[in-house]
Amino acid sequence: MKMRKLIGAITVAGSVAMAVSAQAQDIKLGVVAGMSGPGTSYGIGIRQGAEMAVREINAAGGIKGRKISLVVVDDASNPAQSVTAMQRLVNDQVDLVVGGWGSSQVLANMEVAERAGLPYIVVGATNPKITTEKNKWTFRVIFTDSVQAEQIADAAVRRLGMKRIAVIHDANDYGVGNRDIFVASLKKIGLDPVAVVPYQSADKDFTAQLSRIREANPDGLAIFGTIPAAPAIMNQARDLGIKARFIGTGGLANENLMTLAPKASEGTVLTTYFHEDVDPQARAWADRYVKEFSGGSQPPRPVLAAWEYRAVKFIAVPCIESSGTDKEKLRQCIGRWKGTLFSVPGDAYFDKTGQLVQQSVLVEVGKGAFQAFKGK
Image (cartoon, rainbow, N blue to C red; front, side):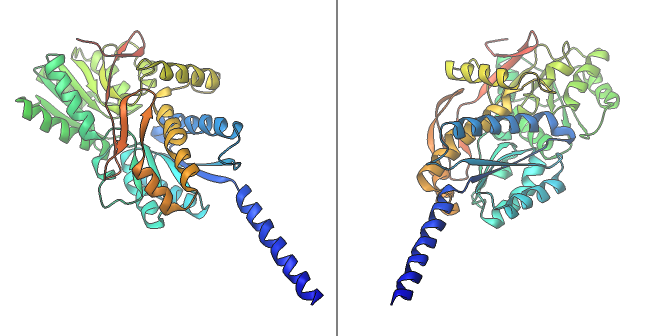
């Protein structure tokens, strides 16, 4: 009898210990992004946004007493390596992933998350195929190419008065997706581009493409690509005597654009994911972010850092607080999320495809910085 009581006591004590251990176990937040390769400047911003959010949450006591443990994986801005990176996060048993940069990388790595049943909030890829009704576990917080390309096409014609628009685009998923939607949007307005030329992500010399564009004599040049190719294109275009005003979408929304093309980028108009002057909360966050990450190997770049920070702190964390880390409950909570986010005008919510519906932001490069676009 005494032995049975002893065994029972040990069993209860063991169960309590296991419950306490489970309660105290860190919540694992995975981040996949390019900390090397052509997407380095974007990936660093994503990592910094996650680090800032997690530091603040843990300093405030974590989530119901549980700390967040950050698991950051570099995919070298490469689709094949991005698949391996996501599989590593699955193997590490992270509770969810917030990150992802580059449409080609995300289109590849999201299949791993979908098969594993792992909630994945994408902050840095815009191809429309990423959010569809067949993708159950993938959500996205930035505008799709369809929204951004349509908006910049409309702004180019109706607000900037452009009549002869040329297009130069990366041949990857991001560049082609933007090109197709932009050209279709121009045609709806009644305009055909005067030239459409591709390039490869790793190209450094764009003389051949820009010579064709110069012959077309455009007054506007849409660049659908990312850093470092985009500022190189701007510099070389000006060297060749092309005076067309540059326009673009979120791939150009990187402070490195002004660093690498300080003169050529002036006057560029583009869609973006964040601007600190939309509201006081955005300005306050940007000031804190810049102060926290100044002095590093690269200057702090708020654009993608802001979306990573907001996705972690205002979407992922509240859902973990209310639903725990059960992946199905977490997925459902993210899908039902609705609220306000700094620098996003009005309410935002996820539609049935997992795409965040929100108002967009248009900016212009002026005096070496992104400024809210106010006119011609």
